[in-house]
Length: 336
Image (tube, rainbow, N blue to C red; front, side, top):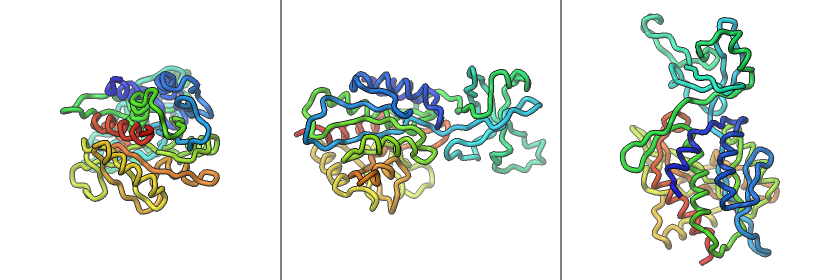
């Protein structure tokens, strides 16, 4: 399995929250290799790995397939597209960003900005209600193709950085999807201590909505939410961050199962897999929050991939961390 190729393909496929069809379709095509019964159910990609055996606990591996983006709110008479955000967008980076409008056909555009010499040298953070997309088309031309409710994503391709690091958009959480696929690749037909179901869930950026539906439908005993978390960058508090290239971040939180956290720590140590600890003092802001309180609850933990520049077009990961995350998950599931 070429992890870089899979991550790149997933990252470059559009799938803003609520409009995940293309990204979900690509993820489904990958998952069917390991879960022949995989299908898109309630918008989420769900597949059962191997033959489920009576008496084994049911484990869900969840990563969200959606990405942050924008939604079209109107087309103005002077030919601009008004937008609002889908998920948490850092408005400081909006001016002059290239985007792709997903209407009846894809249209390239840029988010409008005024140069400093037209603003008297003053600058500030662009308010979302003031943001608009310029495509070069007239209002009449736009209205033939673009409608309110259409999604917009950053128009960005993945690029190789030094070593095994890459940058691009939607690494949150397509890298988590890739880690789960890699874990299933490693497991092959090995005996397992759990029945395993993979879920690539929708609308995580809008309140973990897809995971809530999937958790209720599947009702797992154990859940691992495979997501991204903050990697140390310039000037951040190292106590609140992981580090690129040092392995997956295993979550500890009062809202998570300490039993599963400790089992993951033991698995990493017993298999010489580098790992990091992520301590949270409450909810995790991941899909783990949905699984842990589903029906009668599930023993839940987070396994996170360190990532820089979250929710931007230049998210940075280390492919080695994705590989190590897959190795940890596979070792945790494999029957020793």
